[in-house]
Image 1 (tube, each protein chain N blue to C red):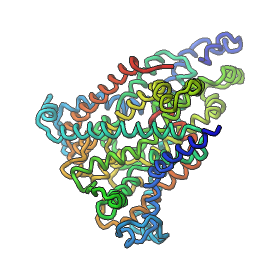
Image 2: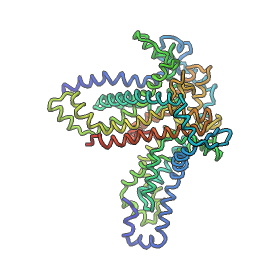
Image 3: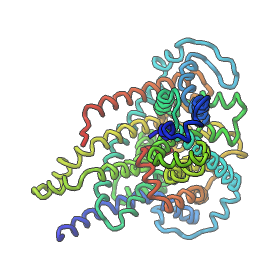
Image 4: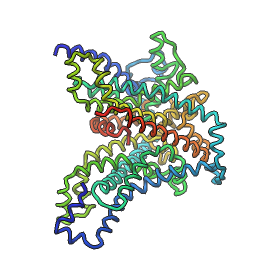
Length: 273
Length: 313
């Protein structure tokens, strides 16, 4: 037992500075967002914030934040709901229904898993322009509305449910859809929460695809608006940092509330979404 | 595990499932699969095949008049396009530095934070949070951290009497800047997956080695590291694929320019530019095909290696 204390000390000696280095840019975002302009253009930099909350009031006037937030919330909600529905239905069919061509259908899902999304950028852009979906909300989430990981996760979860449940439900005259809606899906809540969390993060942070398929502020999400703001030459760094922090805060809050579940979900997949 | 199997044996159900209901059950299953399959087919599988066809055309997305050109796009790409080969080299450079660095850091942190260390959840969270925060919001801050004149990084280097590079303003230093960002952003993932790998190693093995007098260094290299090899191979694979695809950091760090002398241009970014800055749909299709082949090659190599060399417990 006496040897444990110095061992812990050595761990802290390495882990604390490393963890601090990783957290620093997030801290720096907050510090920059609360600094006065003159402090940012001083060298060496001030490491503590000056609490100039005014920056947040000023940046609010430069960008249509309410619109960007509304667009991000709408497309993120659409994405979360769509992936939850498609994963639940397909996962249930693979776990609990018998049908011809099941192995082939499952093989197809596996094949999709090998396709890097980047390869589909150009064809999908052409598809969306042909069906008139460019510069819409649905263009930003419908193409991403099915997740191979989500289907696998729901299937795994439904496979663990006891058969008696389904038999009892059948005797009560329950069909697949009602059994799924009122019994199986509620029992699979941990898996659904994992999917919802991962899709929320992906949806909230979405940048490249919305950048490609949107062209006006009417439907553009936060990160695209923030990038446009940052590319404006006259943008002051403390205002940019304030904007960046506003768009990051919801992610930080969700992370603080659901760290375990989020980390667990990501560790089990190795990918976001 | 199929809940519909026991049905046939239950007398009450038998009467109901006779007749045409087997066909209806199939239909039902396909109705359940349909929403996911329509999306997966329309936006992933069909495009992945379509892109091969697209690569045989010259097509300006705006003018809408595709011309069949055979393999001309590939000829140009592989034989005459210096910028393509530069972006390939730079993608390899990005991958070759960022993947080992990020995996080594992730492993080091996992070993440090694996113990019942008070405050370990806080420390793990600090390393992991960059992985879930938005690219754009964090990169605009990193651009200020890298600022040659006012940035906190050069202030630190100056205080240590080290040279102060131009970072994103310099053709030599913009790639290191993007790599540092990539390592910062991605190490949290490696950390949590290594932690999951460590949790799967039976504690008695390390305990037994320690009782036999092995120090922590020996325990790590003789017991922990070999038993972690499935995790390491899995991580190597997803890190390689992930870093080959890097686009957004290049876009934001360079203000959609690829950097001074295109020094930060990667395959993914070059694909994005050809498609959506120059609207060369056919040529971008050819780049997509080349990229697809590269990714499949990595996948193939990974599958061969993981079946041969990995130590499974």
